[in-house]
Amino acid sequence: MRFLTYQFTDPGGRSPNEDSVGFLENGGIHAWIAADGLGGHSHGELASRKAVETMTDALAEPQELDRDYVSGIFRKMNDAVNEMHGPLTTAVCAFSDGRKLFYGNNGDSRFIFIRNREVLHHSNDHSLAYLAYKSGKISYDEIPEHPAQNRLYHSLGFESEFAAEFYPPVTLQPGDAFILCTDGFWELLTENEMIRTLNISPNAEEWMNMLLDILRTRLKPTSDNYTAVCVIVRED
Image (cartoon, rainbow, N blue to C red):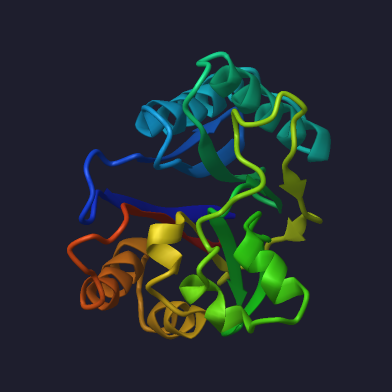
């Protein structure tokens, strides 16, 4: 499989932009990341950048792609951010060898996987709002407006004992697509909008631009930084 990829980040109504984003390929392994430095903690932008840099460095040592490999990269990111003694960040990452896709997250940056006009998989947020959804107190669509949406119980650099969540690998098919994004992006878009725009997009850049056109109609002067990587899977 080959991957059509397009990334974007914008400070929104806040400065500095504490989000970071990246994608790369090395040794047959493709990797994508979106990270969101936590507001209220000094230099969140440095923490998110450190997460991206650490993932990039880890990919310089190719290994067999499996859950242990993905977990090991998250541990390296957590250790690197911990060593900064202060700033924190979320991170959502995906990795593929062209056949299977592995993904994991820490915090409320999300992974959303689409196949045949349906969201088949998405990551779980590590927020109090998501816990309210899981307990049945609110619906999934109400998460963005919940007063505890930005209250996280996991983030990189917050815990010396590493905590992240990993999911069963996905066997890829042509036409699959996925997004990795920070909360400033997914809070302003519905998953139905992600599916609808994907269906009429010839490539990842056009998909992203259509989503941004919708998102920008909902921005406020105080809107958060917003960041995403859009990926469409094609046959070689």
